[in-house]
Image (cartoon, rainbow, N blue to C red):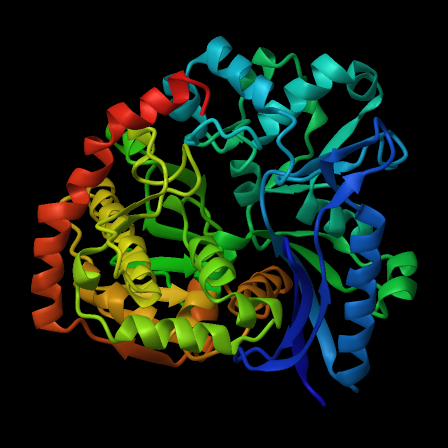
Length: 517
């Protein structure tokens, strides 16, 4: 092909992708490789500890880049940007060599450090500065682990980079940390958009360990001759800061409107709102909402993180075992077909989808995953229907919390649904019915890669800014409207039953914790 293209690189927890887009947002080429954490076999080897193999990931990025480059012909690559998951970083020495593997967010080794940072700083103070709940996987807890368990590593380290920034470093030889990825570390002062001296002092780490902060869409360097040989990408191509996949998917879905919420649905579900301010109030903490800097300078996002598709995977494995073992995607069609045969309320079955303790809107009740209303004649299709409804009820709860967070003057207009959940028409319809908001599904592939490519274009000067990019990129939308009769019924079920489940079970859940369960 001829003309200009923009590249996005997405380092996902299960897959690595590289995609090329023209300036109008049309996907030109894409290549994918599998990804996943590995047991730690070096540097304190323990099979239960999980890490990312950085050399393997870099090798797969190079392979995918070469595959995409081979299809582009005479097209000119104007810029490249990286995106992916948050939290996970690596210490480097003065030569840029890794001193220890990337600890994966799958690894639970820093649970004790989570309790210690909580005691040193307090949950309220952490939230006030960093806008985050104190998850064990947050970078601040990883740093405390190094200080306590491997102080020799921190003494030798001169730089700490998050995964996406490390890939950009391998491409360009230049170190920088994108502001959105920095938001996931629990070491950032969100209001000031700078590293927090107070938080880092609490774990005895010098803020100078971190790379300079950059807003998304900023050029940090150019592809080096060595990286060009490995990736097949032209030397001198601008390498641009991308960011955390949540913010990048928001851009790729075409949303820059504060009245539209973005619902990213996969194994996890993230519902987020765009804000022009950072408001870490106690009520939002109680609802399980976290804040991050957005990929647009001066903006923030407020988000709720909930387990979602992971609960459906659990159902598929246990109630549809033949299809599950065969790896047959038709299992989902069977599941959702059986679920669709049931009316709202699933014949009296309700599911509280708190399958990850301490996360989601019911975390303040120490809620556990719960099924109510089971009888000797309950069918598996009822459980699927009740689970989908429970997932949508927790979504409704977070939508209401985000509406309050965004301000009383804002009237929500829609729900932009992206991720694996957008492929399921029943789930999309139920999202609309339960929330009462139109569910908008973008009709373009590889939304997260597109968001990274947009930022590559901003940095390379293809677009003036994000607004100009979103006015140029063509993103068709398919809208599913709420069905009034269903919406009114779901209001009854939500207010009359679902809202009472988590608080009603609080004493029992805390009792389980008290006896070590």
